[in-house]
Structures are given as C-alpha cells and as structure tokens.
Image (cartoon, rainbow, N blue to C red; front, side):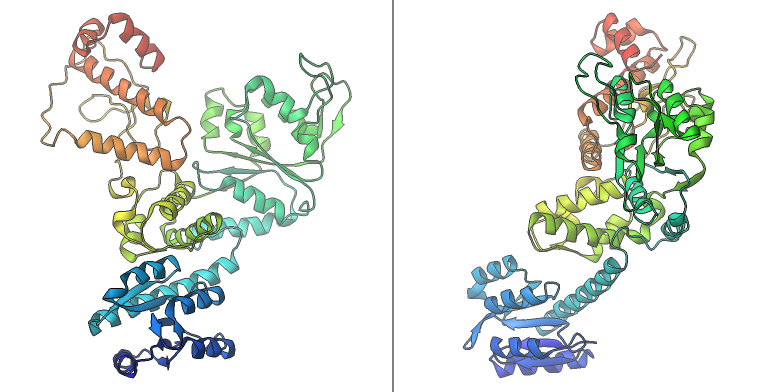
Length: 508
C-alpha cells in the first residue's frame, strides 16, 4: 500500500500521527513544508506516490491551500485532508471549494483523526479501482453476468451484417448497444443514423424514413433524402419500432426483403445498403397477437435478439455506474466530482430504479448540483430513493376481493388507468379507515412525482392527473355499486362530467 503523506512544520503533530498510523499498519512519509512535497511528487513513481495527503494549512514554507491547488492539478483523485485551527474555519471553507476531502480541526481527537484518514484511504482505493474499470470499458459499463452476455454478443456480431432486435425496459441503454454494434462492425466507417419512430407524427414518418421528391405533397418544394439514404453504407437504428404505424410496416418489410425502396412521390427504385438495428420496450409477440404489428416484419427483424437487463437485475453494477455518472456530471458542469458514502450507496442498491440506468444518471446529475458537500450522504439523496412507491397490482388484474384498482407504480402510463367498470351487481366496497396521518398520501404523491421527473417522463402533469382522476372515479363507482349519477353526486361533479371522464380515461 502507498504511504500517507503528512505535511506539518510542527514536529509533535508529525510524530503523533506517524506513531498512530503505524499502529494501524498504515505506512507514512512526513514533510515540513509544501515545497518538499512538490519536489517529492516530481520524483515519485506511481507505486510510491501518496495514498492520502494530510496537510497543515499554515506553514512557514507556504500555504496548505496553495499546496492543495498544486496537488489537485497533478493528482485530481487524491484525497487531501486539511488540518486547521478553529480560528481558521473560513479557510476550511476555502479548502472544500478547492477540492479537499475533509478538514481536521486542531487540537484533534487522535482516534477520530485516524478514522478520518481511514475513510480517505478507502475512498482513494475505490477511486483507483473505478479508474481502472472506466479505462477498460469506456463505452459501456457492467460487470454483472447479464451485461457480460451482452458484451459477448456484441463481439460475436462484430463481423456480421445480420439484423438485430434489442429489447428491454425504457432507460436500459438500447441505443448505446446499437452504437456499439455499429462501432465494432465492418460498417464502422459509415454513418450511424438513429430515428425514434414513436416521436415523429405518422404523416411525417414515411418521408423521414424514405425521403420525398419535389412536389410529392404540399410543402415539398425540394427533393429530400430520407434516413435510409443518409445511412448508406452504415447502420440505421429504428428505436421504438413497436409504435410504427401499420401501413409503414409494409414498406419497411419490403426494404428488408429486397433492399429497395421508393421516395414518397418517386418512381425509381433506390437500392439500400444499410444494416438495420431495431429496438423496443414493448412485447412484440403480444402486439402481433393483437394485430398491431405484422408477423412477417417481426420475423424479419427478430433474426438476432439482444435483451438488455433492467438495472434491478444487475445491482452489482450500481456502484460503478454511480461513480461514472458522478464523474461525467462533474466534467460537464466544470466542478470537482463528488463522492458517495457507503450508507448512501446502500440506499441506491436497494432502490428499484423504474427508469433504469437513465434514472440513475439523472439522479447523479441532480446530486452533483444539489448535494451540499463533496461526500454524498443518505440525507442528500432525492425523496424517491428514501420512500420508493410500491408497485401495486395493475388495473386490469383483480385481487382477492374482486375489486379492481388503478395502478400507482412509478412506471405507470395511461394504460395503467384502464379498468373494468363496476356493474350494478358488483358488491359495494365499505369505507376503509386508514390509521395513518392525513398527509401521508401527499408524501407518496411527492415521491411519485419526483420518480417520474428524475426518470425523464415528458408529461408528468398529465400522467399524474389522469391517474388521480381515475382512482377517484373508480373508488366512487365501487362505493355506489357502479351507479354513475350517484357517484358523480358524491364526488361533487356533474353526471355529464363523470361520463366524459370515464370515456377519456378508458375506464369503460
């Protein structure tokens, strides 16, 4: 292990710390001035450099804050502990702003000082380990067996031109995998073109994919190349393929079958030299059964399938990803990267992450901005990590009592509010007395809102309002045995309003 470097012009301080650290089997090296430290750094190798630097703030040969700045320029990941008298607390603030790990007030309690240095040593070793891993896997991170299977599949597919289907929940990194497949393929020199088929209106999607000729429709004043032509010689990534309109699926099937397509309004076939990679978070087999997705297109796309695991299926990767995203966010914002305590890391390990890796990335960016200290503690984590909302049964399932309820899971969408309307024969649900403070539901709402905001949901207001209204209406209908007029009266709304809401929320 590398030594702990101690810098202090007071011989007694150096002696006490040296003896105490040696009793803990921690090697030391002492200096009397910042100048000696900088000279030693110039001559030091990677093996005999410092594990941790403990420096006084006021010394005849220079300032500890100046030394901190110089050391951080050379070793940005080195934990530096600044020793300061109580009268120097203003300097301690400056030390934190300069990237110090912690400050140690004089006179200090020796056991507490050793404990602090121990924490710094642990942090330094974690940083060393994290740095090695990031260097090894700069594109994608993951040591879990499920992710290693994905990496092996990318390697096997590197020399192939076969069509690939990537499946997985939202936020698992499907586009990252698609880019990796392109980068390590024989088409790496060609373009990588991505299009989200769910984000483009149906009327424009055909032109986006295949291009159009001049005069093909109103507003088409010039000829335009589509994404297939833009991706010539490279890779076309079709994200959220499950949402592609049915009539466009036919045109896509033709391209995959014979490699030719026509621009909108065009009469000449264009040869497509493109590798297609598709991705979806939906169950395409179920979409085929429902008649919403062509079975022949499904089989064309589903030549090789890569399933990306949810983050809750690869919890051992959470610490590595957390460190990576904290470093990435700090770099983007131009600040020193923050570190996370073991207690805070354990809370993250126990969280369900409905938004998967994207949600963890957003949390780390939020912490980089909002956490008050350099070391992130449990109290600094956003509310949803402390009080994760339970995934209740979906609204189209019936619990033992036969009563149907709308889902309140963090990943719920508009489909979650659908439920079977209560008929007049359904048993009434008696009022339930809740032995909880009246504000508890507001705390749950706050945690639910934060979970959706952090996950990047674009329409949080509409999602939560729809679920709130659906829950109120379903509860009132259960209480009145499905009698709508009576339910409307109890809710304080008109009968036309409740009828319209039932239709809007798909509660029929």
